[in-house]
Amino acid sequence: SSCHQSIGCEEARHQTMAVTSGTNRMWKITTLLLLFVPCIALAFAPSLRSPTTTTQLSMIPKSTTTKTGTFYPFASTELNLADNRAPNAETEDGSGGVRQLLGVKGATQETDIWKIRLQLTKPVTWVPLVWGVMCGAAASNNYHWMWNPFDPNDRDVMLGAEDAAKGFVAMILAGPFLTGFTQTINDWYDRDIDAINEPYRPIPSGAISEGEVMFQIWFLLLGGLAIAYGLDVWAEHDVPSVLLLSIFGSFISYIYSAPPLKLKQNGWAGNFALGASYISLPWWCGQAVFGTLDRPVYWILPILYSIAGLGIAIVNDFKSIEGDREMGLQSLPVAFGVEKAKWICAGSVTLTQLGVAGYLYSLDEPTYAAILLALIIPQMFFQATLLLKDPIENDVKYQASSQPFLVFGILATALCVGHHDFGA
Image (cartoon, rainbow, N blue to C red):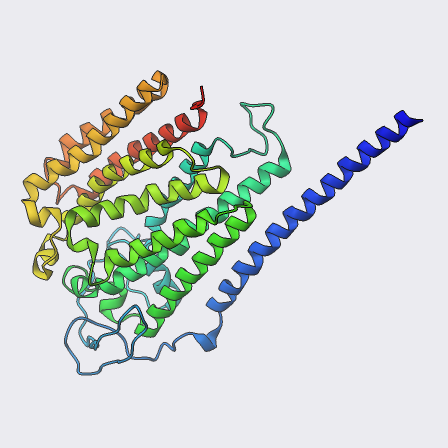
């Protein structure tokens, strides 16, 4: 009889735990929705959006029509409307509409405000951040699959579905919201330079009003921070690490673009800040959502890869030499000249990865070190044949050819970190 009672009590305890677990899971999802849904509702609240009839912006002095006002800390200035906007060299291959949505050169001129808003966030730049979140999840070694073909112990459908949802929300945070915030605020403070280099972009061309730009900046920033806090609640963090990382990243984004610091005026500080924003911060975000950041290696390796990111950022500066020089920005191609800057670029990308490969080998992980070396060799080939040959003409070709090997190398490193037993 006592045995039956014991079994009954044990079954009741398991049922109670299951109900409690399910309740906790629903509470976390509900909390996240309560934080996220108001942000979406705000985006579609017409009474809070600036009307499209407000005075448009332009850095090209063609009219005396001005708009005044300020949206602290994104200071307003007196801006003129361009009557004759500089033409955009629209691509002739029929991809102008797609380019417009992705926020890249050769785009079709657009009047739809939502397409213009999307263009400002440059969706093409979300990809590295989304990848960084994936790398952080891999480094945590705590991401669960719904059905892992390599591990029969990792086939909990509900746990896997929850982790997939967490990962998706973290990608939304890193990509559309915080990267979108970064790109929009950067375009706002780059409007003078863009009037020289890319006068057809939405802000200098007058395609979007000042009020609409400010609304987008605040919506993406506050919405992103709300999502970050929701992820902390979901992950049951005692310290809101995702929120703190998001606040820090948003601050770096602001001082990167805005005076008086405007880190991008200094080639070294600006490019490293850019590299860290695209590699370190999303890695840490993904790892914080699924695991912990309680070892120095979890901080050091992403920072090292940010040095490689510095080199990638230099590639983007070659096409802007004329405007940067005219505006007094000391990008590395302006400060050192094209010849020296291209070697700095190649060296920072290659030497950093070789150092990481050496570190993985020192951990007694020769397989991962060999994989990383195999991914470095094609990058060196493309540096020799494209980057060092003509960095201005071949910047896009080099990025498209070389970067896939870099990002897969980052993932290989993250997998190594996740699988290695640092306690052994």
